[in-house]
Structure formats: C-alpha cells, structure tokens
View (cartoon, rainbow, N blue to C red):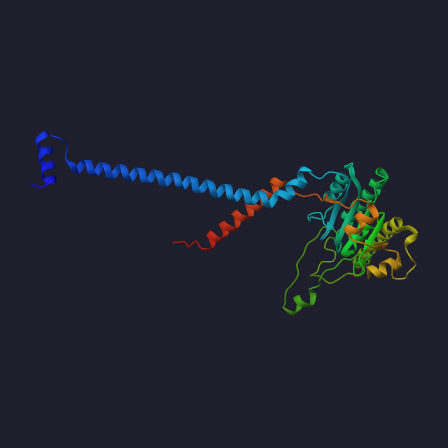
Length: 325
C-alpha cells in the first residue's frame, strides 16, 4: 500500500474531513492572497504614477509659480506686454494692460516700466483707454519712466498706446506708425443679382440697415460713415501730437496711415532711438533685471484650463471612435 493510500485509510478510519476539501480550501486561500497582492501592487503603481506626473507638472510650472509668488528681490525693470490684436475679448485688452501697469508701478522695486509692443493695432476705444491711463499714471508716478519698446510691429492702435510713453525704442527693421482709421467690408449686390437672389429686409428707422452688404450703397450713408472715421482719425492725431510733442517732424504723409521702418520712424520723430528690452533696462533705466508684470490667469486657472483641454481632447478621441450599435 502506498503512502497516499495509507493517509486515505487513516482519514477514513479516524473520521477526519476528506483531503479533497482541504486542497480546495488551500487553493482558494492562495487565490485570495494573490488578488490581495495584485491590488496592493496596483495601488502602489498608481500612486507612484500620480507622484511622478505631479512632479513633472511642478517642474514645468515652477518658474511661473515663482513669478506668481513674487520671489524676485531687488530693483528691477517691469515689463508689460502689448502683444497681438488689441480688442476687449483678446489678451491685449485695456483692462488687462491697465491692471498690469498699475501693479508694476505700485511695486516699490520697479525702477522703470517697459511696454513690450508687438501688435498691428485694433480697437480705437481700447487703445484710447490705455493711452489715457498711461498719461494719468505718469502724473501719479513722475519718477518712474514708462518706455515703449517695439518688436516687429507697433501700428495703428498699438502706436496710439505707445505715443503716451516717455520714449519709443525700435529696431531698425521694426514697423511703426499707421496713424489712420479703417472700416472695411464687402458688397454682394452684383453676386446676388447674378444668382437671382432677392434681398428682403425690414427696418424701423431709415438708416438702420446702413452699409448692408446685400443692398446697394447709399451715398449719404457713405458720407456719414466717412465723417465718423474722420472724427476718430482726428482724435488719434491729437493723441499722437499730445504724446510726442515737438519731436514730430513736418511730413505730408505722417498721419496718412502709412507705416515706416524704425530707422525712418526715428527721422520722422515717431520713435526716439534704437533699443530692445534688455538694453533699455540696463542702459536707460539702470535696472537690468526684467520682471514680467503682464496680467495673466492665476496658476490654478491655467492648470484647470490645461486639464480641461486635455480631458476634452481625450473625450473627443473616444467619441470619434465610438460606434453606435
């Protein structure tokens, strides 16, 4: 008789449970232990992944976090961006620029402010608001200079703003000027006639549909709008003359809407000298350290925006591959 047969005979003779049940219990316990280990390792792996991603995010946002906290010490030159299209719903809007300027000038360590200008222009209303605020702040902080430093272009509404600064610095190849006002559109009257489309519009007020692109142009309405443009143009010209003073040279095309290179702009008096952010901060203001005071979303808002964008992208990818069945 083998050893296993002896064990079975002994179990039967003593009335102990069968060995099959004992084996099944051991296998079940082993499976449970393996599942528990797998769960523990899963938790550890997920926690490590989370910590790794958090560390990467922290490293990426550390420079901005330092700026938001205000870790810079000592005298500095404040930089405020006027970049991109100037409009109420854009990054370069009056509210953001004005808040940035006030914050920069309120800082006791700010020795001068640079308006980093790189914009083709935009809203005359937004530009005028910033222009007036700069002139007001110059009276409130007479010892702190405000200089405009032009990048690629400072035209139209951007130049409107820059003309309020103490000096305008350019690169020889910068584009400056465009002191004019524009209103543009399209006319589709001939196109509609060609395709047999009839325009139907009802108004309460003789000129409510003024300059409607689908109706023939009316001369009296065109003249009326031209007068409005001339009024805004004269406001622009006056602002530039008040800001630049006797530095402007007599030139027949000065206020015609033309743009000039920085080199020609200095000759015409619409700019003062060559310079960039670093050289103006170091040689003119005397505080070479640049600190960006441009108004931005808070750190948490930017993080929420990035996470929201990532989630939206991921959700979009899922929906693109989701087949209805």
